[in-house]
Length: 257
Image (cartoon, rainbow, N blue to C red):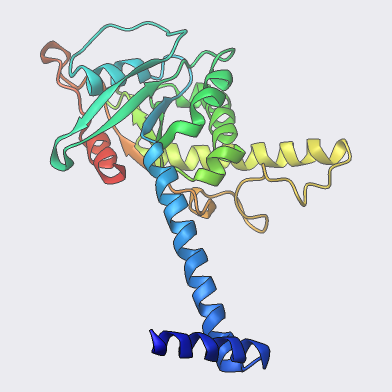
């Protein structure tokens, strides 16, 4: 006890005399406590976010993928107007994630995204690989909105762009889908920046600008956001046997659980 009193007395004198060594020790202790506090807060926030959001435009195949993940069966689906929610079990880790399938209808999807984005531990953005050329603008706009959202940017959940319907003859592979989306988003951010400037916003402080300003858009420039790409077929190549090809999706979900 006497040693402790002597140590405290030495600290007090060091503070009064502004001893550089004592002040350095105190500063290091304060920084350590603050760092530990921030780590605890961040970890608790992540643990509360157990939802995997399934997003995408209409007819991308989200609801069928949801059915395969949650119910492990093939179910004929139709355009949904409400969200679906169920548990996905990751056997290797003995963990559960809540999969939330959000409607892809243009009038509903942004409202539903606002309601659920705070729960997102991860996001799976489903793309119809067979019709991407036709739907590229709509898909890119929705993806741009997701990636530039303040809550999503702050929480930085990992994002998977899932290239569905690989069983179709004209389906684009993940590399082609990535390249086409990067080109479209690059065009989109230029037009959006020009629109902001026309209404008096210089854009220099605009958080919705994606990527680096000194180069063409690339998903690899969205740090701390991580965007991955994978391929799948929710129906599989053999529809008679209902054999979905979701291995890459399962592996990715296991990695983010």
